[in-house]
Image (cartoon, rainbow, N blue to C red; front, side, top):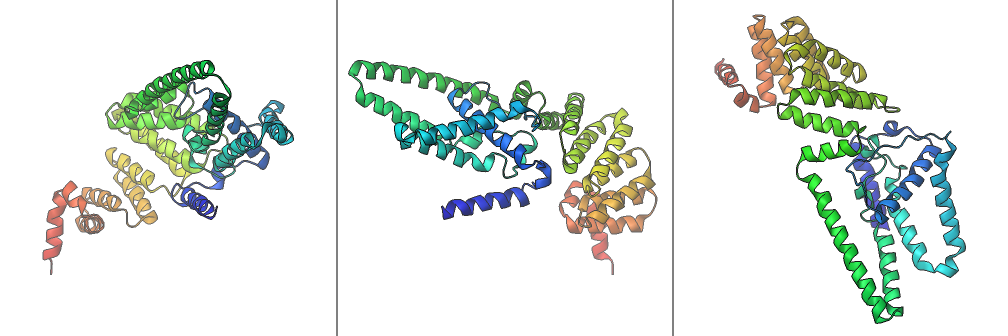
Length: 360
């Protein structure tokens, strides 16, 4: 138990400090969290008993404490718990232990602790990989007990049925594995099953953009922004990323620079400290010939992160285009000092570095 508690605390620390999750990202009151948790328990049990329409990311439920029907899952949980407790002498300890293990193991993923995935969905298949040991073990024990009390004909029929079941499950597992053959297949399958997943639209669009399919990427980035903006209590950081992603795709289109500027500005409005948004806004201004505006954007990015090497390089290029060579060289030297890789990426910086080294 001590080890389990320690690992649980480590997981909470990881989510908070590495994944960047905060309570503000999932602003729910205790009643809403109870509704999510009770629904999730039955969802996982249902998928375990009938693993149909499995998805990498499931639709995110709309939680409304004012809707009396949403309390059905909670009522079912309480009724099942009461029934098992009152009937414990009759059913024995095994079912109680199996269900307690199932729910207790799921507990950290039921909405009481903030997880990054809750931005997109309240449930994920892999959250019950360990928890399912309880119900599966219970079914296995029940089967073994049945076999001990049955004649050979029943045991043979049960074994044949079990073989067919395992064959079917193996086939379903193989078919499910096909959606993971590459990232595009995965994200398209996720969108087919969960069209409102802004995470899936974002990831597919990012992949398409990297492959040069800018037009389709823009379609999915727009859809991601539309869906993400409509999310209840959407976090400013998430909203900023959605605008930033769309702007990055738009700037790859000759007629998309003005719209890209608009979305970079919206990203900055949502998250004023977004260094890359300031820097890329400067890049678009530079491409439009608005050098002064570009310099202002680069300087703002560097105020936020003075160690941003690419920002120093971009500022140097902008200054050099205005004939401010000495100021440009100063920025180039800072850039190469912070990131020596820039000398390889921009060979002309090698001459600047050599000149600075030779200077008295």
